[in-house]
Each structure stands twice: as C-alpha cells, then as structure tokens.
Length: 288
Ligand code: DHB
Ligand code: FE
Image 1 (cartoon, rainbow, N blue to C red):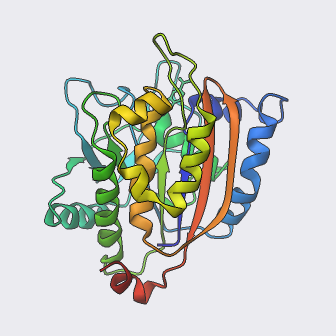
Image 2 (image 1 turned 120 degrees about the horizontal axis):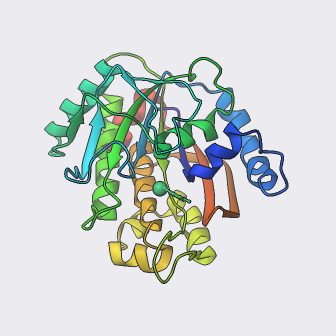
Image 3 (image 1 turned 90 degrees about the horizontal axis):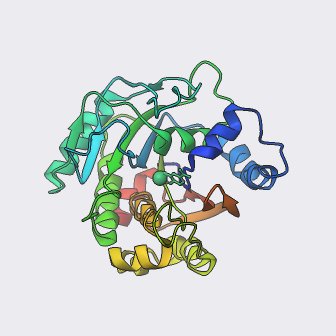
C-alpha cells in the first residue's frame, strides 16, 4: 500500500472542473489547496485505487441498502445523476483483486455485499477528479469501489468502519501479486443539505478531525452516529468513511499535504494525503 487520500466529494467540485471554472475566484482557493497533493500523487501512480465511498441513491435503489459492499466488476459506468453523466472516463475495475478482497473480508467476518454491476456516482468520480484532474481517455489506475451506507439510519458505527479498514488493509497486503495500491476515504467534511440546520458547518470539529485522523483515529472511532450528525451535520456522517482508509493504512504514516476550504457549495471541503511508511515486507508483522 503506497498512500491514502481522504477527500470531500462535493458534486459541484466535479462540475467546476467539467465546466472549466477552476480558476474562477470562488473555486481558485480550493483547487490551489489541492495542488501540492496532486503533484505528489502524480509522481506515485498506483496500480489500483480502492475507493471507499457512498452511493447517493443514484445507482442503488433505496429498496436495498447494503451496509458495506464492494464492486467486483471489470468496469463501472459513470452514473447519470439527473443531468447527464459527467464527461469523465469509464472506471476500469480490477476483478481478480476484488475477488481476493471479498474472500479475505468474508474470512475476517465482514460479510460484505458484492456488486457485479454498478454505476458510480459523484461519491466516487469526484475523488478521482481530485486525485487526477486531467485523465484524458482513461483514469491512471484501476479502481475497486467499496460502498458504505451513510444515508439511511442506522449507518454502521465509526468503530466498525475503522475495524473494516484494518481488515481491508490485511486483505490488500495478502494479495499474492505485487500491486501498488492507494486507498481513498471520501465524503465530508461537515455539511447538512436539508432540514432546519441546512448549511451547517462546524470548523472546530473539522479541524479536530483533520488532526485526529492522523494521530488518534481511535478517538474518532469512539464517536457515535449521533455525535457525528450533531457535530458535523446529517451528511457530515460521511466522515466515517475516512476511518476505513485510515484503518487500512496501518500505524506508520506520514502526512504529505492537507487542505481545508469553506465553503464549497454548502459544505466544508477537506483533504488529507498520507504516505504509507510501513515497508511492504514488514507490514504484516506491524499490523499483526
Ligand atoms: C452535496 C452532495 C454530497 O453528496 C456531498 O457529500 C456534499 C454536497 C451537494 O449536493 O451539495
Ligand atoms: Fe455525499
């Protein structure tokens, strides 16, 4: 595992890129904040990105709500969320790697749902655009989507997300082939899109989260879903997905870059990039 990226997935960040508005005064500070991380990631291209995200009832009907799911398809179409699909490349999968992750996770008692047919919405494509702004004909790496229910009560606990991340990390490291893998944790930061508290932003909580995701993920895993929703808003609970990335990375990491900008649409947009420092050969013993 080479690096982990946590990033917001606000749809208008993707729309700003698709419509050439990234240099507009409203958007420039946000994209300037991404630049050092993008430059570093461009020099560390993975073979596969495992992207932990949530579908927003675009591809997955609300009649079925898998708490945790994983894609095992050869490719994933870009979802049409109501105004046409984003003009970005189809996402190429890594089915053999997915199958290995599924088996390993189920053997670790994470009975994960498997998608063989999945369209990916802004929750996955916007983070790919944050990583790679100009993919051309194809994204720089294959992708394994990992889906989390953060939109219907009861969402999984933050503690369960951190535990899934640890199991996912072990699953990634036990793949017999020598693959370079990056892990994305997406969503957040504080935001609430509807109801009496629509527009809620909690900068103190977000700053605490940006620090603790590096130094004290257990503290974030101890927060209840009510804590997340009270402090970060009803959609801010997406932040629990950052813990899956953090759990997968393991103990020895280095913060490469972070950025925080308010507002992006109705949200606080954050990103933090970690390099994984555990050498491949000692990773298993370090996390055992
Ligand atoms: C919006 C949607 C999201 O899924 C999100 O995480 C943040 C913002 C929006 O519609 O503005
Ligand atoms: Fe979202």
